[in-house]
Length: 426
Image 1 (tube, rainbow, N blue to C red):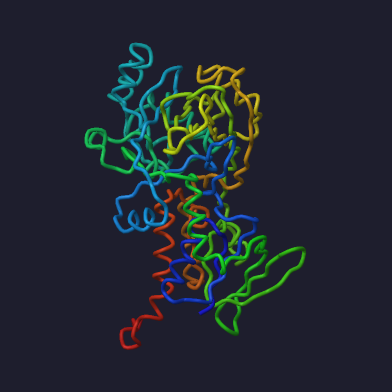
Image 2 (image 1 turned 180 degrees about the vertical axis):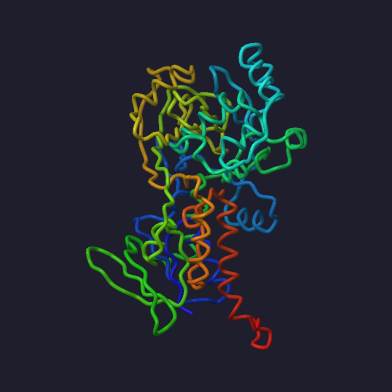
């Protein structure tokens, strides 16, 4: 069995490692960049290990935790995060009771009034889902501005699927019990090298199977073998190879284009701004969010709080994620942080910007319809396995990316391991 893996991020490298562990040797990983890691890479800057945007590793899967921590030594970190909204700091995830107390009487009256007298209507968009659950007051205060800033479309054009997956306020039971992934209290972080060290370690085990600087430009079915012909660009030349199976972490829209399936799914790009600050620490948070829509920054991570190793004294690095790229400038980012009282402008010693062209899948109203087309495409091409957040068009944390890869490999090897007499006659 000859397998092509498209992309050398967490999902691609994990898939290669799982295949090799299962004695599938004809494995080839193709990466367009000159480095591995994808959106989960890290780099050193001014003595700090910086992740490409804020990530997290938290899992209740004992097998995944054991495997990852055996690859990369981790420290267990007590989560601390906050949200800046309406000129004040509140806890993350949002606690509706805290909002009422902190914004009493002004906002509190509207939040309580609209909650008590909210009308239940069909939840055919994100806005109506929030109105049904919390009322207009909390929606206008927090949910609408943050979601519209994140996706760049009106709240009533966002699919309710987004709210069911990632809404940042739990129901009464969740607020009391705090047992969902939303309320995770701790997470794991590598002792050295940032989250990118996970990809670096996976790469060590599969290095001989990885081809860097090799970009996929087309995929087409091969009727003669039942597999797929992949066309690549490398060093200014093109070449083609045929594979029995493909594991793809490409954006699903890209693969769909190759296979002739029209999709309207869109990704939201982001700018990631790193600022070196002339101060020991900015806040006590690992990350914090800006909910107000007049602030272009979505969230900020401070890497000093993640790392356990010794770090440069008297300085810190913060990482700002911005999806309103049409409004972006480094000066604007610094001004917004200064206006919010997070830093002073004269404390910024250096800056760096990284691009993320596929930062977030946009959950438009036709999300479920489009995902049905994806499922139909997958049914027509069972030898193509999609892994990772871009390929599955859904937000994924690091542990979920790793588990995605494991499940894909199990599907690949299952037919080969299944006795002929046990085959499903359907």
